[in-house]
Structures are given as structure tokens and as C-alpha cells.
Amino acid sequence: MPELPEVEVTRRGVAPHLEGQLVTGVELRREGLRWPFPADLSKILAGQTVRTTGRRGKYLLIHFDHGTLIIHLGMSGHIRILPAGVPSQKHDHFDMAVGNQVLRLTDPRRFGAVLWHAKEEGAVENHLLLRALGVEPLEDLFSAAWLYKQTRGRTSAIKQVLLAGDIVVGVGNIYASESLFQARINPKTPAHRIGLQRYERLAQAIREILAAAIEQGGSTLKDFIGVNGQSGYFQQNYFTYARAGQPCRICNAPIKQIVQGQRSTFYCPNCQK
Ligand SMILES: [Zn+2]
Image (spheres, rainbow, N blue to C red):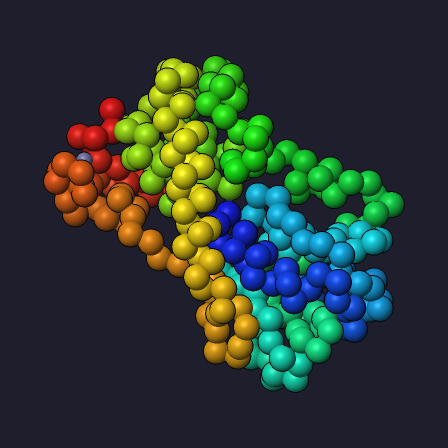
């Protein structure tokens, strides 16, 4: 599933092909994905120039003078930039023709979304899907003090608090497990029991791990262009994620797998207290 780094790498990959370019048309090959596509999207976008791109959590934002196109990749979506005229395949649901290229959204499981937020409706940050999101982990508002303050009343496990996304956004299942390992915090620890010092380690781990993932994903940027390019998702050498039963890379104890809130958590019971 695409997480924050994959979405940010996608944004960086497509941005130079979009920004300053004229949209000449939109093709919708079904009614919608997770939600219906805006039916008049072609009318809304044709003849308009893409100004900038952005990201909020896992939402890719494509800004125009008169509003913002919001794209979510769902469980399995990915975006490519293709030369105009490349025939669509089964799971290609959305095309936006930009300059002499096409931005194409492919989404086999169809949990993704393409939405339009008109400027008259106010700032896009206040969109229903965006306004409850926590702070961005790579921006200045995110800190150990923020984590500490926001978790004083939270009795649920720190792993689930991270995944909830209302305190800090975009720390998905993989990066939550990995960050808690690097911070040496047991994922089952109630969030309000964690002190400032341990949150210092956790905030640093989250920032470092996400930044490293984005940097590593940057090397796949070429894959956004070309017919056969796969998604920009990337496999890293994880310390815990999907390594159940394998030896911890630090202490050799077997990595443990548990289920928290219907999601798998991986951790080292020896390193993470
Ligand atoms: Zn260990």
C-alpha cells in the first residue's frame, strides 16, 4: 500500500511534467473509484494550467487557479506520466492530458480517489478529508513535545495512536513498526505512558525513516515515465516489518508479529521495551 514516502516520491516524479502545463482533457473510464468521479471534470480542467503540486498526508494535490485536484492512491493505485496515445489497460481508470503527455491513474483494487475542490469552497486544507489530519511528520510543527502533549490522554497503544493519523499524519503500518524499533519502544506501550525522552527518540526516528524512504524512492523516479514503468513503490531493508521469526538485526532475537487494530505489528521484544 502506498504510504507517505511513496506519495511524496510520486509528487516529485510527476511535478516537472505538470507544473506550468496546460490540461487539454480528461478521460474517465468508469463512474468512480472509492467515490464517484466529479462528472464534469473534463469541463472543469480542460484549458486550465497546472500551477503547483503539493501533498497532505497521502493525498496528492494538483493546484490550479480555480481549485485543486485531490488524488488518493488507495490500496493499490499508482500514477505514471506517459506519452499521449498510449492505449489504456484494464485498470487504467483516469487520464489527464497535460501538454503532450498523459497523467494516468492505474488502480486495480479501486480504493483510490479523484476529487475536485473548487476555490470558492475555501482553502483545500479545510476539505472534509484533509481537515482532521494531524501535523506533517517532515514539517516543523512535528516534534517530541508535540507527540508528548497530544498523547497525555491517549491510553491506547502507541502503534495504534501513530496509525490513527490525527496527531501525526502519514506514519503508516510499515513506518510505524520501523520507527518504534529505531526508538526502542514496544509498540504495545500505552501512548500516555511514554515520556518526553522516549518521544524525542520516536520523533527523530519517524523523521529519519520517512526522509530515507523518500530519498531511496527518488532513485525510482525514472519509472514514472514510460509505458512499462511500474509504480514508484520501493522495498527497503526493514529491521522488523514482515520479518516475523527472523533474527533481529541488532540482537538476533526472533522478530515477533502481533495484531493490533487488525493490522500486523512487527517488533523485537528484546530491543523494544
Ligand atoms: Zn533486537
